[in-house]
Image (cartoon, rainbow, N blue to C red; front, side, top):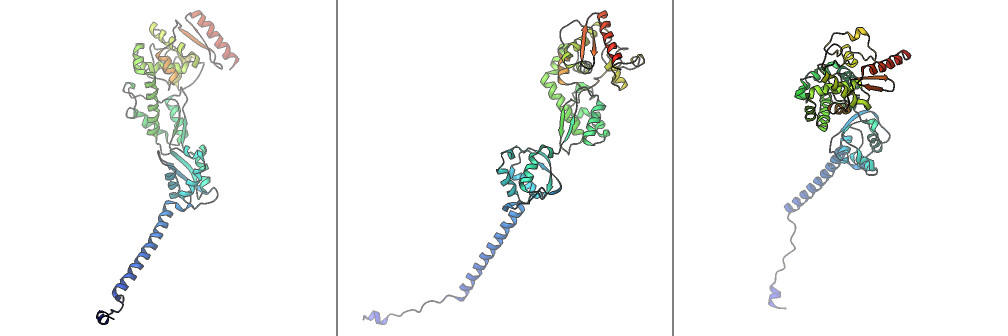
Length: 364
């Protein structure tokens, strides 16, 4: 054996330093603790966000009104349902929606649901139009302002005074400047669906907005000028056409009005007297026809001071462009069918009037 070999010292194996061993154990414990906390955190977050696929059974109980905002995804809708106690988790709703192509049709609005519904029941409820919460108001053509207000009150349970206040401030809600601050004639007839949060001003504004849309579509202001009358006067004529004519005869009724105005003849329209009296009679008495009012077109020549109802788009169009003809008179000889006869001859008018009176005698 070499000298080197004889003189070589063999070092004993190194033992772990007590301090380093302790530090390793602490690090390991900390990592385990962080892992546990992280796992619990994930569970809490999933529970808060509705994750995990938990689901209730049945159709739930009570009532919850949910708003779906424009542009919300199905995932966001699921989270909203979870946060409001409708479904157990957003994931359960997403799973139910994934298996139903109609789920993509869920649009913005308010929905009447229940607490603790199964995700499938919640989805089906949202797809049923009967569960959409809206204020639905049907406003036919030809209603007067107070009749429109009555319809809105019935649909919404909002006091009439609030609608009346909104109407007085109609100029701030989009009423054309040339309307002279008077909303009569501009509460456009249509079927409206308002959210349950809508107030009286919102509803009146929506109706005026709808009028403005119709007026733009008809190019109302520019075409009015071609009639020789102002846009406001043409709206008055449109309301008379709406009140007096059958839809098939709007153009002819409009022509009679223009012809009588041009001839300086009083319009002699029962509808204007009815407006003054707040009635809807088809056969006015002599005393009613003698009513003193600027709306009485038997006593006054020219147009009444304002529209007398809310005309629809067809009546507006007829007022802008009446049929061609020389008629000066018309009589609805059969109010049931709307049959109306037109003439330029006074004696023939008297014959038509006799037909109407015969109808009234047979149908008191």
